[in-house]
Image 1 (tube, helix red, strand yellow):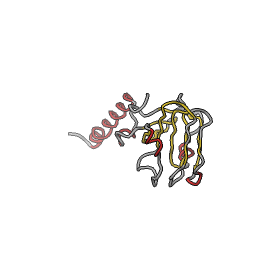
Image 2 (image 1 turned 30 degrees about the vertical axis):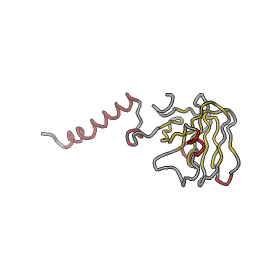
Image 3 (image 1 turned 30 degrees about the horizontal axis):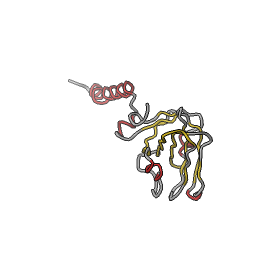
Image 4 (image 1 turned 45 degrees about the vertical axis):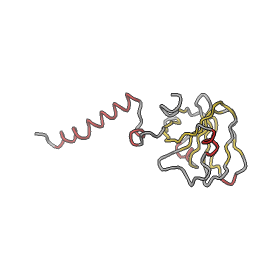
Length: 161
């Protein structure tokens, strides 16, 4: 019959190999397996699970009134109709955030770190027109190494690929 090594191979190694092959063949990340249905974007090689704000109402509300980010969500991605100097303010915010500015070419063009709720009514704007803005927990940009010049890949199936 089977010895212990053969059982381990059949039960663990082969399924992991198949999963790895499927992930690479279909360009699926491990996060998409464990959190299906949640959009995942990438800044450089960093996968970030996001909520998407692509309507005027969603963009206006942003994270106002929230106590923090939802569990297992790394950021809120604002999607605008056209590149502009879109402003972000901290109206009714309860926690600090990092603001990552992303242009039409999917490049990070600015990072505003540790923006505090007390800064309201100041409006933060990028130095050049952007099409996307990513809000994350404060210090996230430093923690994972997000910097100006990083390339961005938008969530598959939710926005342009």
